[in-house]
Amino acid sequence: MTSDAASLHARHQAVMPSWLSLYYDRPLELTHGEGRYVWDADGTRYLDFFGGILTTMTAHALPEVTKAISEQAGRLLHSSTLYLSRPMVELAERIAALSGIPDARVFFTTSGTEANDTALLLATTHRRSNQILAMRNSYHGRSFSTVGITGNQSWSPTSLSPLQTLYVHGGVRSRGPYADLDDAAYTAACVADLEDVLQQAAGGVAALIAEPVQGVGGFTAPPDGLYAAFREVLAREGILWISDEVQTGWGRTGEHFWGWQAHGENGPPDLLTFAKGIGNGMSIGGVVARAEIMNCLPANSISTFGGSPITMAAGLANLTYLLEHDLQGNARRVGGLLIERLRAVTAGLDVVREVRGRGLMIGVELVRPGTDEPSPEAATLVLEAARERGLLVGKGGRGGASLRIAPPLTLTVAEAEHGAELLADALRWTRANLARR
Image (cartoon, rainbow, N blue to C red; front, side, top):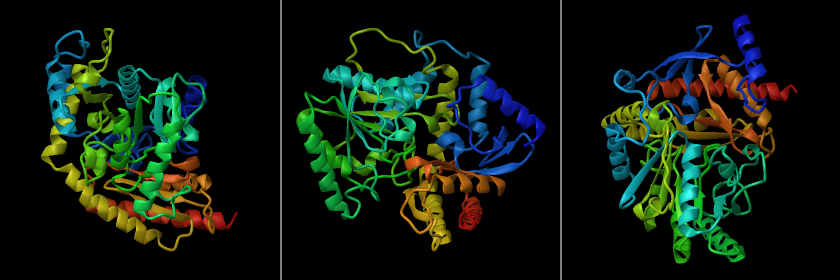
């Protein structure tokens, strides 16, 4: 670490919370980016396979987005939802049409946490119940209410909550008591668990909230159709389904535009939350819901920063670029190649338990060699080794033992192959290093 970087790190530690974690022993200061690459303060270039936690969805410094931001900034930066906003209405119209939810209404927030918090407010008000079903190993944000429905222990700092949360099985296919079952039997077992949990509930449950692919949980997912099967049970009780699309939305999984569409046999969710990629780095989140649910609040409300002109302009430009360039199709093609390449280069490496994912949302679960025990140590070593080789990846999963790979959706075949080779070299180095300990 250079003296400047060390000084900035010291200043960070002096004024930021101790729980505001940083990657790497020598934390990076990223100064600029272009396409799928970023540069640090020392001028080192990195292939970005994490995209600011799945947020740089299309590309760094995408000209269409930066132009839209600049032009809007030159006209009006801010007005709040107390005034009509043409870019907010235009983006809401496009998202409502794309959502698949009938008679949809859209409310914009500034983050995925706030979007999920709003969805919980709507669902509990509409159903007049504070009981929520959530998935084990889930993550939905850092606010007081969203921490209360987060099933991933690493991201749940308190058991206090305004909600009564009941956790059900299904989010992690390859671990847990049903892992050895085939997909049909796995789904049936999870449905039976859901029905049993509902019998334990004291009253009417408000909603089930679920990520179609668990993000912080390590990019784990159930078999296709599981949430459709859940929906049959929920519908009998009038329980709402909230699909948390903060990380799975906008075509990242390749096969579908929204993650819920892999479970759409019994129709769309009642509410859908989104954030991250739509702004390509700008702070946009939001909720889509049927009008009767969105309009159920008995009091007035506004959003000071949600739906601001500058973020809406960025979102419109970014969404237009994504659709016109078929980035969902690129995620399917290049992501499929990357998954197969990673499986090939990790074959025989006993530090790798599983390579899983869809499109450009890929998890690599690491274990202590020769065991099935998750290895956060291995994940930390790989993160450092990849950085030294010019590749940035994320981590998550149980105890932070899974690598999270989510490049911008414009990733090229050449970049995918190069990134796979860099990661393979980092994994081989890690395996050798662990053997010496």
